[in-house]
Image 1: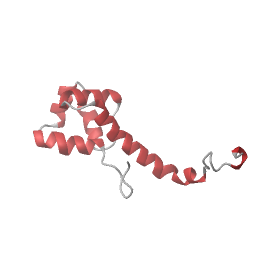
Image 2 (image 1 turned 90 degrees about the horizontal axis):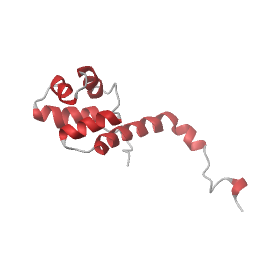
Image 3 (image 1 turned 180 degrees about the horizontal axis):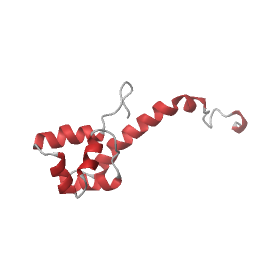
Image 4 (image 1 turned 180 degrees about the vertical axis):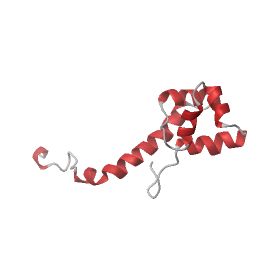
Length: 104
């Protein structure tokens, strides 16, 4: 369920505040552990880059979570952004139950 009044928490915020800070881990240390660049980690944390399936698998393996945990965080943000961008268009679409030419 998407929050109604605010954007969902970005995966990068969860990564920073729930994982890196409590562990006193730097972005570079995480990047080295995951085999990715520090730039990639930083872009995720700052919300400039999305969590990809590859990143989700790496984070899940390292932090003993699941890829779904990370992908669902990203999916919620993507769904929210899409709904905000296209919600007026979605309101114009009639459901099949309302479509007069398909009623019997």
